[in-house]
Picture 1: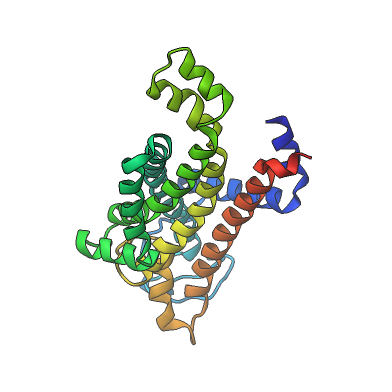
Picture 2: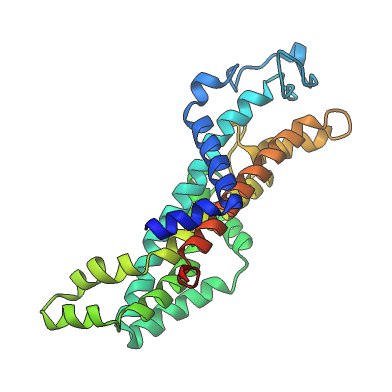
Length: 276
């Protein structure tokens, strides 16, 4: 752990990503206190106002303060990304661990099901799931969790296969430890590193997917201050008021960039080859 932390701190890009993620998290947690206006308050007298001292990011087509809506949108994007990835981690790691540890026909059955899911493009699969369940933030999180399960299952399976034949696993079996105890005490803790890295990177993918679904009208519904939905409504005013769509677009870009840099840094820090 000390070596990992040391390598992570030496990675400037990773530290920048960590600080950016920390800023987004703090903004999301303190949105109620730092947002200058209520994100739902409308004032048609100042609709599509350009950035000013009173409204640093300007206002949208209903006179709502864009800065406040972007701040509250950070809550939604982080919640969708984290909850969606958490769903996929729970089910993906469970399926991958079972397949990798027990092998045989169980492995073949689980992996063939995962192959079926992976045959579909991720965004199209998420779009299909939301179309069946109905447009809402909850269904977006479920869709993101479902289409990410195969990736986590494959990574977890590979990690478990590389661990299950180690000497300490054989020693645990010789001492009479049950399969459940071995899996939870030895296998999963020693195969968790790639899952941590993938989870961080997958949050960025989840945020992009959620924004894309909202842009198409299949995610968060108006007047929810979700960045993808804000980007969608603002495209009608690109010529006259570009700030309406540019600001939430930049917010999406920086949050995705932050998680990608953090994930890359964790991957380098947790890579065993970097220990030398």
